Length: 163
Image (cartoon, rainbow, N blue to C red; front, side):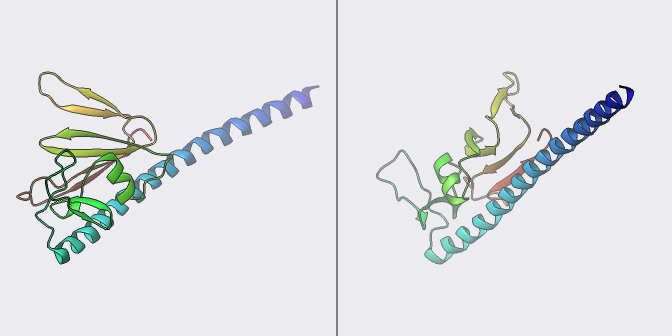
């Protein structure tokens, strides 16, 4: 009887240890996926920008609401200032985002930011400073190139704190 209880306790301990390790593997896989998406965003943005230079579209901007404006795009990817826009459908298409991932976006400082995450992104706005934060902190953000005067015309950030 004592041997049976000992074996059961030992097997339970091993199961708990394995479960904890498996959870760590899932977190590492999520972090790796988001880092890979960020790399794809950088590479694709630079390739699209090079093609925009060749086609003379570095100052054109695709505008969704205005049907009379030049609709700038490179190979089906909508661009602004030569880089992909951060609209949800464009981010999915340009960066080949899996259907398993969530893509949301938000306007900030005249530009659009797209968030790619595993879970639904929730925005929290401070009414005094008008600053906002995003939870959970496990996402990639892509800010489109709305201002040509900025030295950094697009921006990709990876947040892996809560993966």
